[in-house]
Length: 400
Image (cartoon, rainbow, N blue to C red; front, side):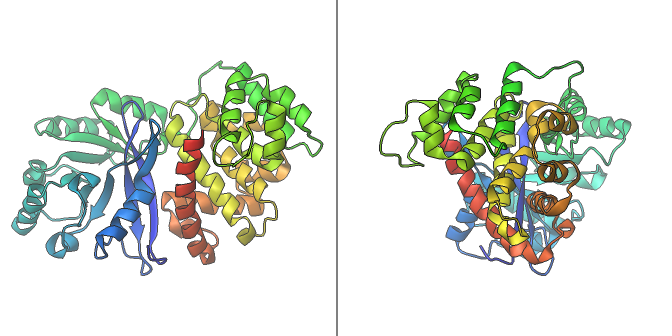
């Protein structure tokens, strides 16, 4: 992949919060976008899609379909991608005028086996011919009032299209869209806690927070950590599985938590313990885990570039940045029960300090908000860290 190309991905969910595809966001060095270039070799395109659309599912690595925007210029002049049609969903942008020429092009694309999605859809009579070809219609629910949303759905029920709700920001919006008949969902609702009034932290939650606090204790010992880990049988089993995996190439089997802690070392144990303990109870565990792991790895890889001497601290900051959604609790409340350093706490709560700057840039890069990145000079490093982290996440999830 050319280093001048910026790529980000956003997950697309079904009604059960299974990740069924990713939308790929694109911008080149000139600031142009969002159509992805396919003028390279088929092998290059396949590598790109594998890196950005692959997940571990049921113990197997799968490449999910990629939703990619195509503008009017490409629809007029572009060549069809040299990829299997089931690997892509071609999004027609909202500013494309549905002319006779465009309709002929769309018919040819559909005849080749590609699926069409209409992006940021606002109903107009001129879109009727395109609706006969489209498989998916994406509606930005923030652009429409409740009455307009219902009017759109009524119009679209006349067509054999699957409705995708874009920019779903809260659990309530997600539930409402399900009731209206949307089948697919996209937005940041899965990254936020689903707060339940009166809910208390469970015994496992408290054990996890106790373990994280002890991991930050400079006087922590294998014995003190073992005493906490042993309170959670699932944590014990998964930790033993990890340390005995091929990843660590240990010549003999590890049979106790004490041995596992010594074999891993404190810094490595921090990573795995945080990962395991914070993803046990998540509603959208798979995607949350992928996002948190990617953030954590990127923070770790970029720590030195941002003047952070301890990459383990950067990893923990990235990993904990999603703990509120994982535990369904407000971040401020969790921080009160998790006596971590002020540096990490301020980074998580307020994006302050060099850790906060790093975390903010990693988050913005991952979501495609490239103009909001503080250290624009680090764009290439962010891109490289993202590419490496995606592959690392696949290997890491396979270990768990």
